[in-house]
Amino acid sequence: MEKTDAVTALAALAQDNRLDVYRLLVQAGPDGMTAGAIAEALELAPNTLTFHFDRLRMAGLVTVRREGRSMIYAARFETMNALVGFLTENCCGGVSCASAPSSKPARKRSKTPA
Amino acid sequence: MEKTDAVTALAALAQDNRLDVYRLLVQAGPDGMTAGAIAEALELAPNTLTFHFDRLRMAGLVTVRREGRSMIYAARFETMNALVGFLTENCCGGVSCASAPSSKPARKRSKTPA
DNA sequence: TTATTATTTCAATAATCGTTGAAATATGGA
DNA sequence: TCCATATTTCAACGATTATTGAAATAATAA
Image 1 (cartoon, chains in turn orange, yellow, purple, blue):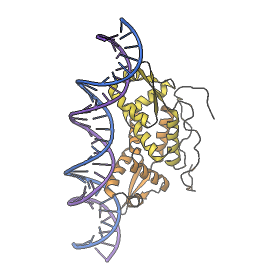
Image 2: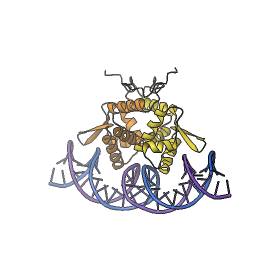
Image 3: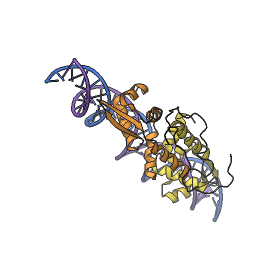
């Protein structure tokens, strides 16, 4: 991942509501969630949400697809992987960054790919 | 690491010049660098730099100490560790985030704990 | 003391951000 | 077709951001 992409991704995550949106989508898994469901879960106005989705999408952190009248947003895990990779490679002292994750596997999803 | 601290740290890193400053300090290691040396290396005005140092310091990403007339800034690796931990625990699908770092260990430091 | 170096503080500025309300668009159903 | 649902677009707004120039502060040297 390039530095500019890292800055974009960091900026996309560096906001309360957007981080909430992203975390919710991570929990939702590859199937994603409709914009409406997210709006309801986080109590955000749909137009505000569109603004935040745009930022996340520009950063490559989420994808959208239409299904009927709904827009379904889903997390793009590759980008988060790349971001964490960038941080551990460029921003750690080579000491202990990115050691073992402490606990809480973020929610079991059972059909674990690869 | 709490969510609010994560947002603060992400915001601190989500800016070109600040990310440069932080990366430079990571390279410099625990001894740190004087504000002046950083200003020269990155070609930034000293007052602009003070502004960015403040953001990084508030986020717990750097420390300062005075030495003679100089202020010496140094990276706080713990915070970056905590941030990467937060991202891998909360923002990954439990799939493959925080796998093996690809290469470039950013500078050998030899006394590897835990 | 006065001068010099290193850095911060302050006020001003343009630019960007996050939110809102109203209107527009897209899809599906009656 | 007309209507309801789901989401986006647009224009506004106050708040925050990054940068600049000028002045202040801190430490040292002459």
